[in-house]
Length: 375
Image (cartoon, helix red, strand yellow):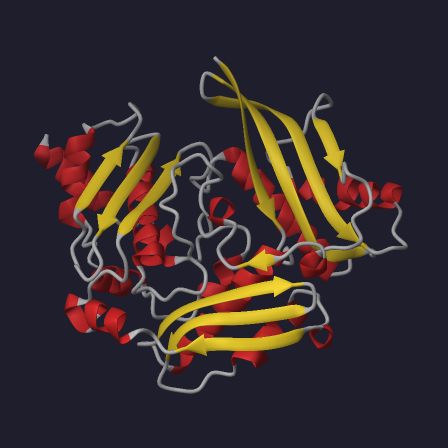
């Protein structure tokens, strides 16, 4: 069976991603000042306006607008060209009372989160998504390190891979759209992408002569960032997760502290899925976890290995429930989610990088031993 599967990524200076970065920078500042902070920070970037809103409860005063200015400068924008509005306020006492503190902390909201892993790549992520992230990461690096002149912060990439019998055999198409300076010709831009970005991004999985390569297919891309498109926190949730290869519960990650299971439990679900696949108990694995607001224990946990499991999915679900404590407080403790590490997640996806605690494969032995005993 032949299939063509695609995934996209966006650069750190994309308007939605700069909003994610600002939101997570605010979160990190709060956690650095007070690990018990409760944060749900949203950002909107439109034209020359940066608007920050949401709920922040922190033991210390946080310079939200100063953080936004610093974040924009780091991404390659000119902070003085923007107007700033701070509409943040304290967390609702109703939510605070329902969630609580300590060992019995309840879920910060209802909903289902999903984790996914595949043996297809060393990152345990789908190949098209890995390649798209590599392009955007390299594009940002080339601009930031001035390896090539003429690039600006906004950009995106899409990769389509041809599969035969579930195995990747060929990169069918690559689309790169990179913001550039007025003086940078389309010909020069295409040469920059071909010579300094793509070889690095596709090392280990080379492009073929027949690969369709589209660089700025719409032509000129000088007006970008918030001047070209309004940005919002949490609008790139598929880029953030699995590129559409697995379901998404709908809740965004950026700007939310770990009491929000939208974020913490999604990280835990990825942790579980990756350990299952790394243990060779499945080639692909989807983990679903459902919560009720204010209730600590999930109301449902489900494992689906898409027929690739070395053990029955029901047996795996039972083993996961015994090994992984999925109460929010337990997840926060196990994955050290009060540490101010979240701004690192705001570009190139929240998964697939070994420096994140939820990417550890530290439960392989426990899973194998319990599955052996249960069988």
